[in-house]
Length: 453
Image (cartoon, rainbow, N blue to C red; front, side, top):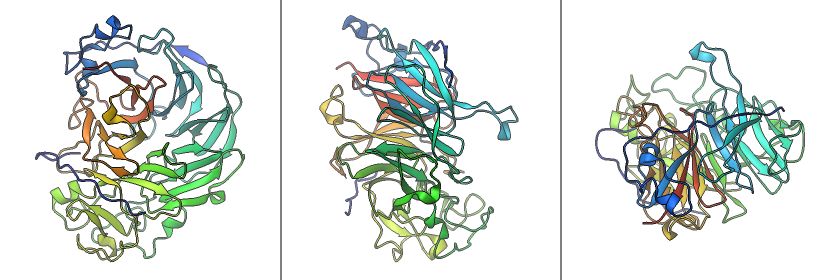
C-alpha cells in the first residue's frame, strides 16, 4: 500500500553472518502501447510477437510481455519443468465471505507447443489448495488442503500418478499458506505465525503487551525441514531450520548457495495509533514500517519476530512495542540477524527468485526478482505494492537499490488497463530465460522476455 508522497527507496543493509482435462487458454485483447517494442518486432526475429502495449505492463526498455494464459482460478506459485512446461498451483475460490460454493483449486500444466508465447492449452493435473509447488526426483509436489502431497510425474506427461501424502495435519489459522521448496531430498516449509505480534487470543487490544517468551515460536513463525521422500509426516516431525520469520510466502532456494534460502517476509502491522492501529505511531509511520525484509536464510538463523521489526527510519531492527519498544530501542534485537535489504512497508511479497538465466542483460544476472501483492496495512493511507521489483545482488549482499521491473497490474487498488484487478503472486524462470509472473486475482500469467534495445 502507498502514501501520497514519493516512494522511499531503501539502501542495502549488510548481512551478518488424478484425471486430466484441457481447456483453451484465453487470448488477450490488448491496450494502448506502454513502453513496448513494436508488436511485430518479435515475429521479425522468429520470436513470438509482444502483446499490444505489453499487455498493460510497463517494463524496462527492450523487454516484451505476452499473455501466456488468462482467467485461471486463483493461481499462486509455479515451477518450470525441464521441457519448458509451466506447472502452477491454484487456490480454491468461493466460500467464506463470498457466500458462493467453494470451488477446489487445481494444479495446472501450461504448454506452449508452437512457440507463440501463449499456452496452447491448460491441463488440470490434480486438485490442490495452497501456495506451494515443486518438481524433484521424478515427483511433483503440491499443497492441498492441510497437507503436502506428491505425485509420480514424468516430464512432458499431462497426467500424474496417485497422490502420496508426505506431510499432513498442517496448522490452521493466521498465516497458514504453508508454502515450501524442495532441495536435495529435503522439504523446506514455511509455517507462518498464528498472530500479528504474538498477541494472545483472537482479538487484538490496543497497547497490550504480548506473552514473553512467545510460545508460538516453538511451532510457527519459521521454516521447518522434512524428509521429501517419507510419507505420513506430521508438523511435529519437522526440524526447525530458521525462526523469527512472521510469514515467508516469498520463499525459494538460493541457487548460488546449497545451504541457503531466500525469503522476503511479510512484516507485522498495527504500529500506528488506534483506530487504524494498535500503538502510538503516526499513520505514515505505520504505513512505512516495518520494511519488508529480504532475508538470506541459513540454518539456525533468528530474524527477530515478534520481539523486533525492521525500522526504515532507524535502518536497523528495533524492539516491538509489545515488548517495551519505543521505535528506537534495540535491546531485544542485538543478537538477531539483519535483512540483506528492506523494501517499502506492507507491499506484501509473495515470491522471490534469483535470476540465473542468460537472455536478460548482464545487469540482471544473479539478482533477485520479488513479486508484491499489495496489502491493506497502509490504511488509512493509500494502498500500493502490485508490482515486480528487481534487486541487484553481489552474492548474498544487495548491490544497490531496488527498481521497478513490471508495474501496471493495478494502481492503488484500482483496475489495470484492461479494467480488471491484477495482483502479482508467483514467479518462475523459463527454460529460455524468460520470466513468468502469475497474477492470482484475474488469473493472468504473463511471460516477459528480452528483445533488445
